Length: 161
Image 1 (cartoon, rainbow, N blue to C red):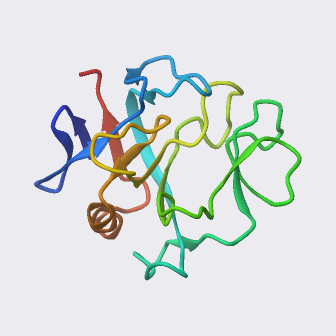
Image 2 (image 1 turned 90 degrees about the vertical axis):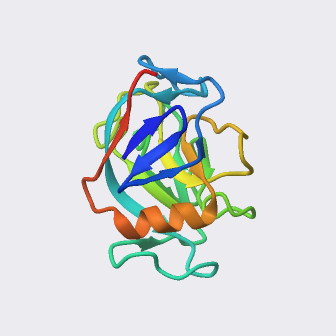
Image 3 (image 1 turned 135 degrees about the vertical axis):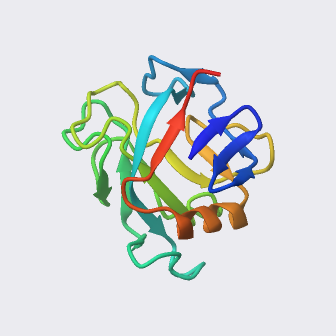
């Protein structure tokens, strides 16, 4: 998968997508809203089983207490954790559909450097052109297609464009 100025290119198709509101960065920091340049590997898929069918046999259901730590002081920074959780976190089971399907990358994982940025996901967009906090976002049907055609270790290449 390669991010281009015209969208994500993958398996002979091009998918419109949005990136972080801060654009691309070679020096990603927690909360800066940028999408990190580099080659990132796909390391997992999470999905909401109450909202959509399992996209692939290696996808893991998102439960009601699943969270993602984004607190640089948390020993579990940039890892999935469970509620209750004393540190700052993002809820994976959201009221809106953005995280109904989440493709996980290895950005700053598994040995996270505090402050380097957490959780670069591929997920559903709010609407075309609406930026993310640093993730790459797609139309729901495109994200589902991508999830069915990737494997563990598939590369996401984000070049400096």
